[in-house]
Length: 403
Image 1 (cartoon, rainbow, N blue to C red):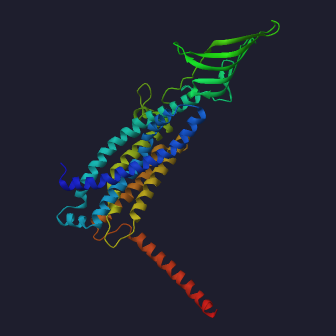
Image 2 (image 1 turned 90 degrees about the vertical axis):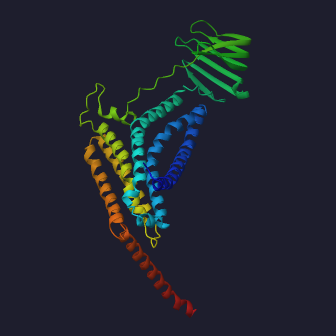
């Protein structure tokens, strides 16, 4: 059971965690939303598909932001506790840093299980759904609108041009349509106005035209025939929409067990480096969450005389470096140039060594600061720059006085 102190620490952690996830997701989604609106507008698809595509991107961005949010949440919570002397009071009452880690560790254990489900199963299916929506948008499965003023090729030899569209597409004017059949039979229609009407079968649509002319040309049958009409219904066959491929064509679309098991249920051979690389990538990114409390507390606990936030910078750099090196290892494994396990184990081992060293210095060395050497180096560099700027100012003073 969690005590009141554990619940208090948990509240301190959850607030910045949720804020970080919310801000990161909002920024990433807003940036992507602008591009999706441009794509949908150019393809003539409905606006609603943008929000469906964004919904499928949320798991992708959540997987990226979750480790950073957890690190910042724990880091800021323990930095606040140490800056306000609350941590000193808790330790004076007999609670060690290891004991105070109980609430963050429970939280990270739950989020690790969630991350396995997110990276292993939710992300692959949502990525496939996003690709499917992109395909349907480009193939016209959403019934992309006919652009006025342009010649629109509807397939099967049919070309349609609408001069102007009124009342949200309910009224069309200055209509030109031409149907060319394989045997050379050509039908050309012009009409003052018209409208599209739905049919019951769903495979055709009715184009109701008013006040127009039909020009019918047949090969080797003399001059073309011309007809005038007041109202004419033309049944137009809708183009056949291609089907999207089945899921699993890429490693990103395969779930965790699909990456290591063949369709017959047997274990994949280790020579299939692309699948194993994607598998270990998701495993490492998930279990990294379990070690974030050690990293965040090791860098977040500071003394009152320490004012810099070097720990936050170092922690974020370590997380991003691990993410990019593992990402590079996956790309190399896809090319078959490296062993997936060995290329990922090295960066992950270095990350763990640094993480536990930071925590050991903070928790078990009296007055210890794992970044003290870095702070001294920055102080020395700052003093050197200060002396350099002062000497430059002293050299410029006599010249100014002589004038």
